[in-house]
Image (cartoon, rainbow, N blue to C red; front, side, top):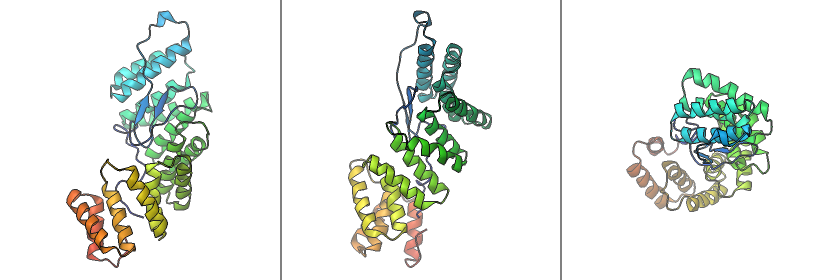
Length: 289
C-alpha cells in the first residue's frame, strides 16, 4: 500500500478536531456535529438570557452550543466559560461533557489531552446512546494511538442506523484498521461506507489503494474513475495522481503514465508522492513503497 502522506487517520487536534471531510450530525441529545475525518459543524444559537427560562436542560444545551461556536473560532477560553455555565445549569448534560472533551483535545497540551479522556467517558456514561460522543471519543483514541479502543467506538457509531454521522464513523473505522495494518477489515469498513453513501470520497481513495495492493486493477480503475468524477473542479491531489500513475503502469498505458508523472513532479515536486515516483522511476522493476 502507498504511504502517500495523506493516508492514515486524519485527526488533527488544534486544526482538526475541527478537521477534513465529513458533515456528521447528532444521534442523541447532542446539538453538535463533529467531522471526524475533517471539520466540525455546530448548531448556531444566540446568547441566552437565563432568567427567561427555568428549563436548566435548555440552558445547558444553549451554553454547549455556544461553546461549540467558540471552539470553531479557536476562542477556547470563551468556550470553557460557556461549558462551566452548562455544567452549573445541568451537571448531567452529556453533550456538555462531550464538548469539553473536544475543547481539551483542541487545546492539545499533554495535561488537557489526559483530561479529555474522562470527559468523553462521562458523556457516554450519562447517555450510552449518544452516538456522536462515541464518534468523537474514537477520534480522540485514534489520536492517542489507542487504535483497538477506537475501533470499538467507531463500530458502535457505524452500526447506528439513523445517525447522520454514520458514514463518517465507517470511514474513521476503516482508517483505524489501516493503522492496525488490518487491510481486509479496513476494506470492509470502506465498502460499508460506500454502500451508505456512494459519494464517500475517503472510501473511494482508500479502496483504490487497497485494490491496487491486491492487483485488482480493473476494479481499482473503475473506482478511480468514479473518484475523478467526485473531485471534478476541485483539483487533483498528489495522492490521486500517484494512483493514476500506478494504474497506468499496471495497464501498460505509457502515455497516461508519463502525462500524470509530469503533472505530479511539476505541481507537487516536494510531496511524498513525488518522492515515491522518483524512487520507482529509478527502479521500475521494484514494487511501489
